[in-house]
Length: 569
Image (cartoon, rainbow, N blue to C red; front, side, top):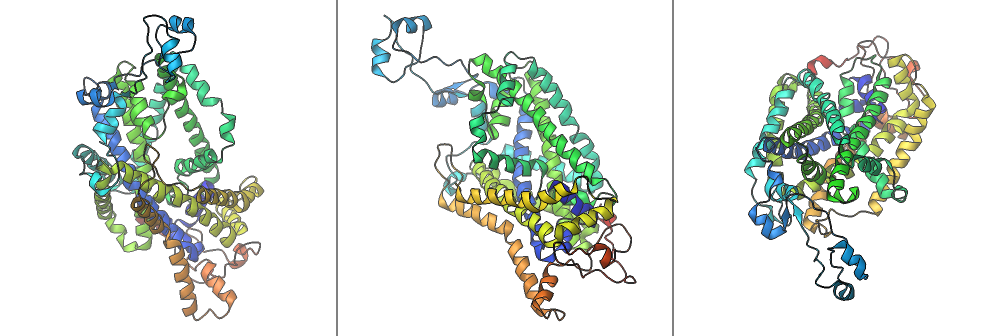
């Protein structure tokens, strides 16, 4: 699908909404991509605000997540570092005596009668690390729930970091793709430098090999769990930004004859390599941490926020000079976030300019206005209850909706527009069909829609709402807001479809059912290659194998509208 979206953008020179001249009834897919990009851009910048706050905190003489506040010690049994856990007491007095100290089991027979003389078991005390409490009690000050009376007011530190993050985004995007493209030269390469440095440093830690083994040796039982594959599919969509519209947008700025086939393969492989390198960086450090506290790697590893803002900062604090490693790590995270934010915002700006061409000369003003609006929309996420808002936006507005949208997208292109016609477009653009084109046809027409459809059905059948840390589901009103957000993101798909259907009854040239199908699904007269030449004739493009025949191509003498991409820069 990554290759498919790049081709769509490069062939037409159009963004995510305008590209659906190829299948006008499916234009709602492009509008939904734009809406989802806005939703993700709003809450993604909150994560970047967390990163900035940690970045500035890393410049202190003592890292704030390495020391416990007084109230944390009494309320949460705060410890500065993870300690080696005691082994459980046994029913053998000699074994207990050799251990010297052991933790109570809760069994009175073992804890009382099996202990050596003058020795008692140690009660197991639940502790929380300073790094964990710093993030949840100091940075986001997480409340106990999402109810209105627990949301609280925006935290000024987070709000200021959020403002700074948006200012940086605006500065980089205000001149369009020309300015952001120059910034990306740095933001796309700098993280690799830091990753390699952290990889070397982590590999030198005692216990790094244990972390590597935990990372590369699969748990075969987990591979049989479909939840793992569902999570992997979601990660793939986010990692490659498929069905967010960004790939179509970036492809539209390519030269018409750019070897997009090799670009898609290279980027996909580099994405895989980057993920593997990142895994080694993280788990070598986790292995060293686990070794130092006498625990297994799985006991110190965490996912989500816990990885970037709790466990890894704690691990970096043990690497002298800890301030340097922390500054480099969080600066790297911020530059990675900038890359994603550029793509999301540029997608929205491109959609606006494609739909309203007169706004192209006001792009700077639109960029500033859109960023200001996103900043204010993101302010609730900086409240103590904001973490729950971010979870709702991610769960309903991005994760679930993208899965639905991708299935509709691939069917609209490959089964309605036509996979053979799509190959003809590639052949015209690149001079030949892609290598192993039968494989691509099989993937586009069978594998992709089938697998995505099955994943969607599984998610619907096994649906579970977001939950609090204790496992309790979010309240009904919060789930209702999530479903409303999902409906808002996807409603353009049916609305545009029925609007096109309604217009077909008003069109004078529509007299039969076949005419109505062609009116709805055949490419419009404006659709065609963005190569600055006349569009091909019907005989060059027409394919009856799949999709509706394109009867929209003009005659040989008709003027051809060509999209001026330069005006979008």
